[in-house]
Image (tube, rainbow, N blue to C red; front, side, top):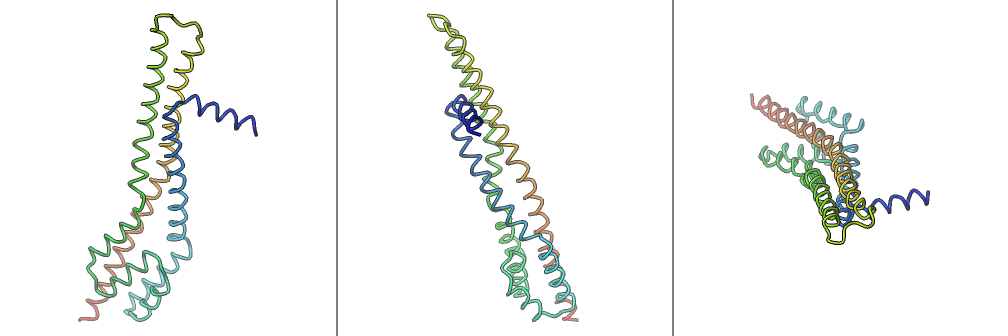
Length: 202
């Protein structure tokens, strides 16, 4: 275990200064992915599906007191949206509030997906420049390992940048799918509540 850890440290050190911002991005990405993953498991687990079916059933029956009682005991984005819609708040503002919560940290993950490969390319360029500086020096190259160090930096930073981007991309796309599902459900809630009101007004 200690040997593997030392090897990782050697690789990280060989990657040069660009590895530090990439490491920070990877830590942020993992932290956000865990937080969002837990959030969406709670929002779209089996218990939540049963809760939503019960809410839609009460709205379809026109039982507003029962629907309000159901949402007041719940702190989810669905409950807050339903409570606001039952209180006759503007659908657009309710939808935007829900979208803002669902897309939390989405811009951060998107930035990491874009920036990590670019930082990897920057590390590649710096490594190649370092190697060519050594090759073009007046004294010539006495130790080929010095040139190999620049090439290693170029390859390591590129690989690490792509790894960070890929590790971020898959959770990000999953979270976007959950966001679309959530907003579609809230849109269906708004339509159901509007239909209920129209039925009562007849």
